[in-house]
Length: 234
Ligand SMILES: Cc1ncc(C[n+]2csc(CCOP(=O)(O)OP(=O)(O)O)c2C)c(N)n1
Image: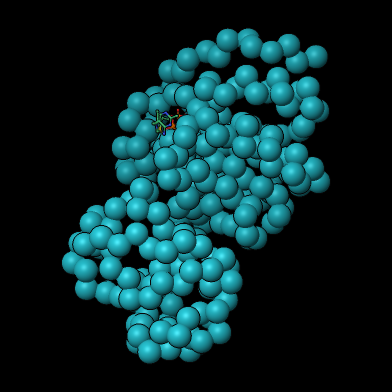
């Protein structure tokens, strides 16, 4: 990384770790092209008009970050502090909220208390994923797995089974919406066959789930589709 010492990065420049153009085009998050970007990935950057990188750090991503940290000067200013405080305050406010239906913040706060630091949360894809990504507080690396990129709905149950097979001594919880659950709920048979114990939290069917998120509380629609009895759990 010979160029890193000379490119003069400022605190508000971007370090793009593992960025893939297919996920979220820089035209959307970088329209003015006024900053410097350091691309950190195990492959070279795919350059286009909105993704012109000042430096390419091509290495294992963790090794690349450690290398940069070794050359960087310590700054007391941390731009995410205010956001961190806002999130902590939001969780605090709702931690004791006993309204029904349960609000996402209350569920996330309880989940954090129920799981040990190295237990694993697997998020499915849907409005619940936005809540988890925004508010779930990770205490250890790789303990909250979220499917981004093409973001296939249905990863929840099979993802939890896979995590439990890899880490049998950790508790594994998946949060899934009813659509994601119905897509792959048949995998519960796999879990039973392999005697893999996972926890599944399933959201109820909601109208305009994402607008519920924007409004700050879960939808209050109590109608729900009844799950057919799929498994014989004796
Ligand atoms: C395989 C696949 N099909 C469709 C989509 C598009 N999609 C994203 S979220 C979503 C709905 C998920 O609904 P649900 O599982 O009920 O979760 P909620 O939004 O209620 O939390 C769909 C269909 C996708 N990402 N992946």
